[in-house]
Structure formats: C-alpha cells, structure tokens
Image 1 (tube, rainbow, N blue to C red):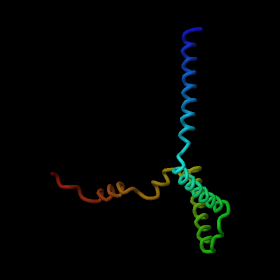
Image 2: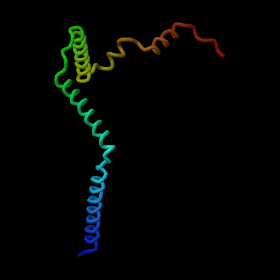
Image 3: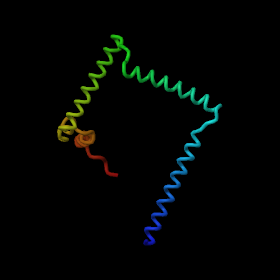
Image 4: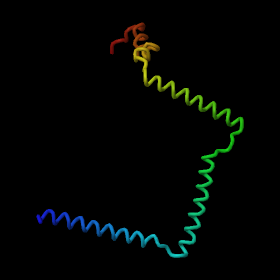
Length: 123
C-alpha cells in the first residue's frame, strides 16, 4: 500500500474516532442534574405554551375593529400604490434630460445673475 494511502486512511480513521468521541461527550452533557432539570423543563413547557398561543393567533387572527380595518386597508393600498409606482420607474426610468429640464440648477441661476451685474473692481 502506498504511503499516501496509508496516511489518508489513518487520518480518516482518526477523524471518525474523534467524531464518535464528540458524540459521546455531547450525550453525556445532555444529562442534567435533577434540580436543574426540574426548573429547566418547567421553563421549556412555559415557552412551548406561549409559542403554541402565538402560532394559534398567527393562524387564526382575531377580527379587526372597523376603524382598524379601515386604516389598515388604507395603508395597504398606499403601500401597493407606491410599490407599483416605483416598479414602473424601475422598469421604464425617465430620461435624465427631463429631470434637468424641469428646473435650472442653482449654479446656472447664479451664473446668469452675475452676467447682469457689472464686472468686479480689479484687486
């Protein structure tokens, strides 16, 4: 058997034994003393009950009051309108020349204002 094959077989065997040892240690760590287990299990039960209630509320939400429903629907409609508006702009953006043609830049206005003024006195 070549030396490389022996080396990698031995390396794989060591990794396998290390993995088995770690699995045994993990099983040993899962065992808790009775005093700690009593309180820990009680907390797990409380958390599970709370999570079950939350899942039930998520699956069957309570009926909204008319006022809440009105504003919630209005908010959903506004969000959908904004989403469609931005999606349309992403799909077909307006040319940049339209943006700059709407309103002249502040710099351009300053330059035009200086053109009307007399030239400054030499320093």
